[in-house]
Length: 286
Image 1: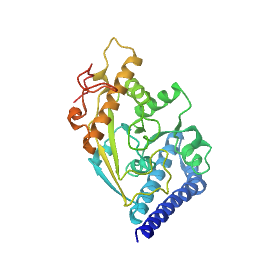
Image 2 (image 1 turned 60 degrees about the vertical axis):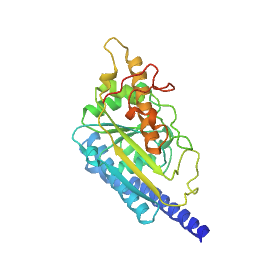
Image 3 (image 1 turned 60 degrees about the horizontal axis):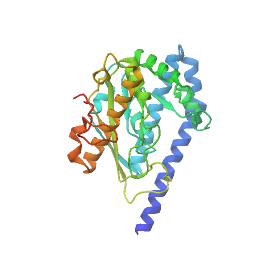
Image 4 (image 1 turned 45 degrees about the horizontal axis):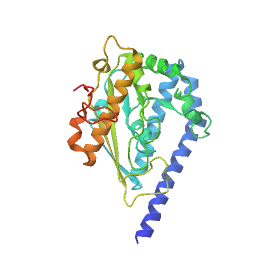
């Protein structure tokens, strides 16, 4: 019976991913050409396309819930839709993180791998929605700063890819910190957990857990990057400090939730990467 149940879960997961791929083609071939005809300008086209992506992601999540593949719980979800452009950062434990967050937000700009622009299932979506490829160097920061100033919301994963198998955080890149410091916008942290762990980096989609995946997305309080930067510091130094503080925030929150290292967490504050809590603390805003 357990073996039969496993095959049923594999089949359900495969069906859900097939639906996702077909949905991407439908958007690219049927929906986005209409958007290009009715849009007033490039920004209008991108935001209309992002809304369609949001509807597709929401439908995909509903399909996965109906098939028993996953369940989703969101804490303080109303914060996701607060007025004005918001800079969201999140940890990246699974393959589904973008889909889950996108299903909750009608407008969301993203950074995508340059390979997505060559993927037949993704390139039409990425181009129509105006997602930014990750191979543009400093222009990526400028593009995202401009979008935040236009009142658009943005999602970045500081790890740049999914977390390592086993759930450990990878190294954090400084792009999100540079965007925050350059724009002056606060960072809104999203903490994603998946129990049991699944769809991690290096894990095949058919390597399914023994029960449905239970996702939780916690929407945190905004973090003002200027509270971590001194006036006499270069932006590079400030970005390194902010990136270190962000990683330690996630390390502490995830350890707390997993019940590991709770005594060292200090409620997600005052930690530095690779250091003990009593060494050279960088104060994290309360």
